[in-house]
Image (cartoon, rainbow, N blue to C red; front, side, top):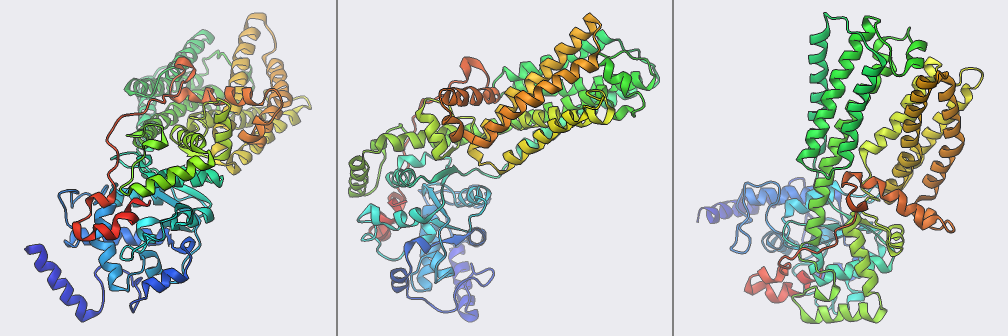
Length: 610
């Protein structure tokens, strides 16, 4: 009764002011429109909204919930104080979108805001059971670069008009027309069930595959990975501070074997973390590694300050004695490794979040298109019949499988998956691996050039060539598609960073045992990397996944090999097998199932057609 009284007072105020409570910034039209004529004139590929419209829509819903215009139901008992999930799309459509658009002549929300329509860049596919805040936040956070307008069915379709005739033929439906014009498709997972338990979402996957569209997975904005990285950074700083305070009045003596033991301890933490799946144990290893790195850096600082040291990196330290301690390679190497553990913490949290998103996409999906449901049996029969007639059922299932595995489904990834290549790490490249690449080739080479510890007899151009290759790699990486970045990062790590670091350690050990000139040995290593590994790495980065696959004889094997090492985020157990077991869960209910009796006939076909 209290809510009804509030709505009555607001309605009276609206009539006096001529405004609508949701019209927060004057976006609604000044006069009613002819919705039927408008949708007959404007093609469905222009029934779109902008990202700004979605933000406005979220604020309208939030205000409607706060002021009682959107109420809880038995089917949707949402928490009015929750700002993360919110009422379901079906509830918002029934209690907000339909009443508001009815006031303005029954257009869709999109054409109510933009009567001339907007071109479709992005097609959003989703299940009407997700919360509206969850939906908007994920779409906005995952909005692709270069996209301006998006087709979202609950905002794009006229909710007060009978569109059953428009969806009578799926291939001529508004969904099909909009998707053909979109550059990519954005799939919005939810915490209730997989969108692919609904037949219209399956049909949209079929259209995306048929037209070679890029299919993306929307993710909620989440900065937890950087929070965990900062926590590890705090561990690193605290350990350094404790070591510095404990040793500031002591003059520590550093021997080469002590330095080797300290480096080995940090290396052990690195290797241990790589062999573990993301878990609390991995977090402990990362914090232990950061703490050891910080304390060892303080120990090195004390030894260098007292000029009482004999480091494993003897050539470097003898050459750069005039360099301040903070810029010495012995000190910087431990600090750099400490930061590596911090970055790896971010990877661990990202991997956990990705697992949750994949679980949402798989929840209730059996892996078979025939098991998808619809509230309108004829829609299901027509869609499955069209897919079967084209003989593309297996291909669509494969496209969905790639999406669930990699978080993105593109022609390149689908081509790799057809060849039996695990593409689960192709998109979710590792921050830690990229950091190691940057550390090894740019920072390390810049330090070597500055101190003149390698190739310093008229051969410095070799080092500059090495640095140029690293810069070119980063340019290629930054301009590559997301589906190629896992391969590019892994190529640099496997063919560059790991061989270089292992070769450097072996060279230093051999030089120490055989009394070789370590500077000359390092120069030989730099020459080999510059003229062998560097060009191969750049070639892979230039070709990408599809180009590398086309290499005769070695292409598929090379892609398979390069994508597997990046699975270190998920562990090396079993050479990173992909878990394809589908979780069993209840399928999504159609939004028409929760419609009230008086709206069922008008919304049934429309709500199921998403």
